[in-house]
Image (tube, rainbow, N blue to C red; front, top):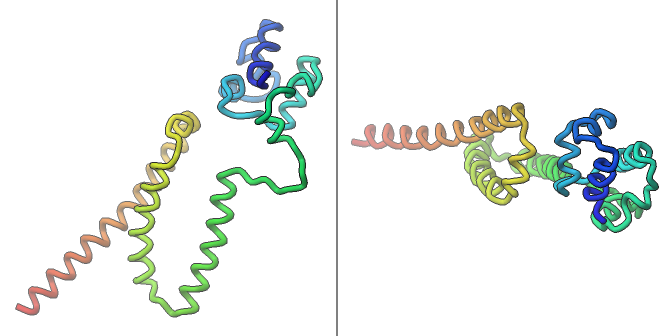
Length: 177
């Protein structure tokens, strides 16, 4: 049995709401809901807290939930979340790109022009590749505000660069006439 089903079963046996369980675990009701519907998995610390709260063994809670058992398996490997992978790998590539840019003497204007175009393309590709339902559920008001600000900081320089290029070209053509 999956941990979400086991959690829901144990909670209902004790006539507890998701809110009551969340309060006892010092979590949000949404966290409990996501565990029960299988959207996310609880951390090891939360699995232990659930086990102690309900008075059931860890084995009883997690046996049969292959996804959770894989998550909790310790084989000595460092496991990064997908977000951690994006951030850490991205920063490594930033360092490499900066070394190449400064090492070859490429001008910052050229880099800015390239990056604004690439950032918009990669943002669109990234947005297209995510699971919108799960992503949308995970966004709070702060994340929406930061997302709007991120989009503005990506699109405004890109559009300004396009118009600036057209403006410079039209000025150059007028001077040649």
